[in-house]
Amino acid sequence: MSGIAMPEPDAEAIAKRDWLIDALRGIVPGEGVISTPEELRAYECDALSTYRQVPMAVVLPETVEQVSKVLALCDRERIKVVPRGAGTSLSGGALPVTDGIVLGMGKFNRILDIDWANRCVVTQPGVTNLGITRAVEHEGFYYAPDPSSQIACTIGGNIGENSGGVHCLKYGLTTNNVLGLEMVLTNGDVIRLGGRHLDAEGYDLLGLMTGSEGLLGVVTEVTVRILQKPETLRAVLMGFPSVEAGGDCVATIIARGIIPGGLEMMDHPAINAAEDFCNAGYPRDAQALLICELDGPQAEVDHLIDTVTDIARDLGATYLKVSQSEEERLGFWAGRKNAFPAVGRISPDYICMDGTIPRSELAHVLRRMQQMSAKYGLRVANVFHAGDGNLHPLILFDANKPGELDNAEAFGADILKLCVEVGGVLTGEHGVGIEKRDLMPEMFTEDDLNQQARVKCAFDPTQILNPGKMFPKLHRCAELGRMHVHKGQMPFPELERF
Image 1 (cartoon, rainbow, N blue to C red):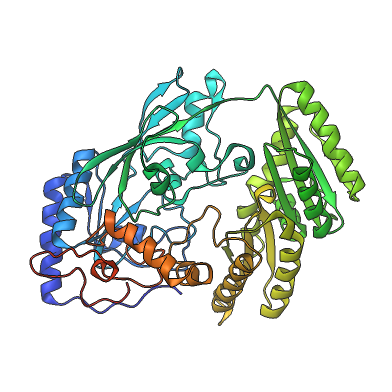
Image 2: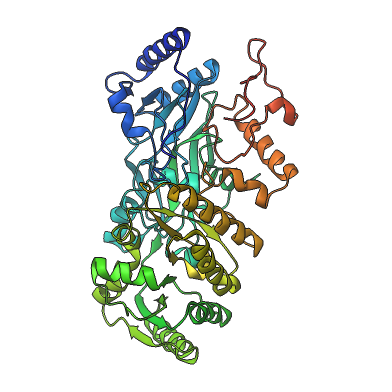
């Protein structure tokens, strides 16, 4: 799907757009408002590029006051707002709407404070994930969540999607590493949640905001915890003759009480694509490859390495290699970290899915995916966070061949339905966005969804923030027990869904 058809704007709509752009330029002067068709094309999609829409305008604020005034204006005039970080969302989370604006937070790109005593960093949301680690590594610290896109994705976007990474098994996702937020509500109010202390009082609104996909407010400041780099880090590569054996090894490692710093798995197509791309030294004949990283005191790490290799041998591993240097350890990870661009070399297009399942279901789900692959006539390569069951199947297709994109999307939907069927969830770290929006009823009842929509109404009664994401059906707030009337009008009375 290359775009979403919209009617041509009439004279009244054009006049309103021109008025809005002038008003926005009064708040964010200079080059802070983008409105020409050519420039707007840069914001028509995010990393889920199969969907494209050009927004009415893009606003690039530099101060919290500007964000507050922009939101207050849009709230008053019922203008839809799509918050955007670096645009790396893989679920369509930053897809704009044609009758709304994109609020780009890229100019909020400074680290405000490094608090060594409290082991935290106060940062603006436009700072990249890796940028935080780069700012503290000279003192032996790092920021634990590390998505594959960490060189580009921003901490504000990580908050929106509750991003993870290869080290989330032991150290948690974004929600486990955020201590405080400053955010702006739709009416322009600026509030603070949490801080530099470890626990916040009252309701866990900090947890609610993390993973809220830009539907509840706009984050303007983030306080994250930083960790001291472990004394020792070593990794082991394990090749197996089947995905079932690899899945059994994952389950056995965890069942033995071992929590690795990272535990990743790749199947045969992904192994060979990564090896072709960066020569990481992976065994090409393996049907499943595990990368297990252990960290901590040297004596503990050495003992755990021996235990893990013994487990792998008992389960029929055909390849075992333990890193003997930091350079070699990083080499093991090079293929995994570059798996997505590597797969891009063997297929004109691919969709990166994201679902989470119980570890015990890994082998079963991978077998079912192979059956689906034959059904749809499309290849699939699997790269995933095996330790916490977070799957990233890469469905390979050619958008230039009629019907292949539709087939790929149907294949992806069946994978996500399978995740729910075996006791998992629709997303692990990419979010719902528009990609999984219409699959929400597979996991939640109508009452469940209505209750979530009531939370949305409590924060955003005019429903201007990131419309069309997450909820398969738009409810008026009045229908959910909260009425917000503005100048005698209900919000969006003509719409049943965005």
